[in-house]
Image 1 (tube, rainbow, N blue to C red):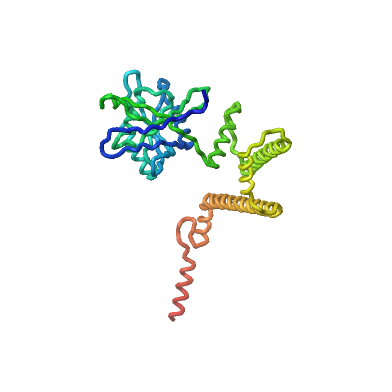
Image 2: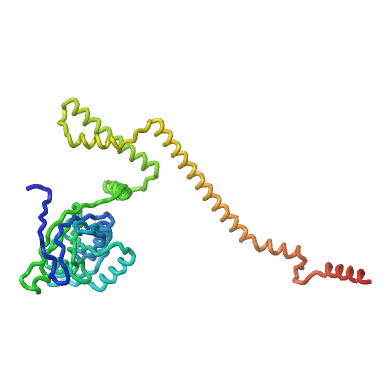
Length: 343
């Protein structure tokens, strides 16, 4: 059997046909890394007796409903036994309202669980999230499962569901889960952070130091040089008929080379050196401003500390005696002068 998962999309009713027409479009789910990290953090903070934890998924949905992007999530408290499950629905509704106020562009898209097992309770929770009113109706609710078993690889799966059951009572706690394709998508900035975090898994203390800008640039250049060396070896092997050629790979390399700017290497080196000089000037000015602010703070602190002595000496020079009485010499001289001018 092939290791690659295959998926079957079915035209399905997503709930009772009341109040509108349900969508039957297949789904493609995109998961942002921050959502996975939030789920893993929730799993680490669970109680010892809890086998799994659940929460609400938030994100955006395309206009036709064919693609869902999971961007955020929050935990929802619940207790689960072999006989019953209890979910704090009031907390879920309040947190959902707060999240939608903080992020108006996001909507409710489904829920997650830190277990790959699907049972009757999973169907009951799925029907709640996919129902009308506070649910995702008329769109299907996405169920994301993330396996968090210690010592094993983290595995994520996404499902949507179709109701089954001959009666409404049986359909409320029953559902047929249908796997749908998914991918974990991240940008360049998130990729750098993930590479930094993954670099700590082979270290004894499981910690990684944050690299400086120069170190990051050096590492990126080393990676690019390694890629160029690997491509050069492959091209040489194809030319010498030591490796089978690939038209798809050749077309990909031609497209990549076509994106390279037609610039003289001397101009690139000059622009790069100018950019480095600009960065150094900005760094130098930043250090000068920081030093000036620190010096000003020290002078202000010294002035406040020595302010009492200055005020005392200034009071004596303004004609105030140490015992608090005013000196009368100046006033007598002024009075005598006025008397002489009157006569």
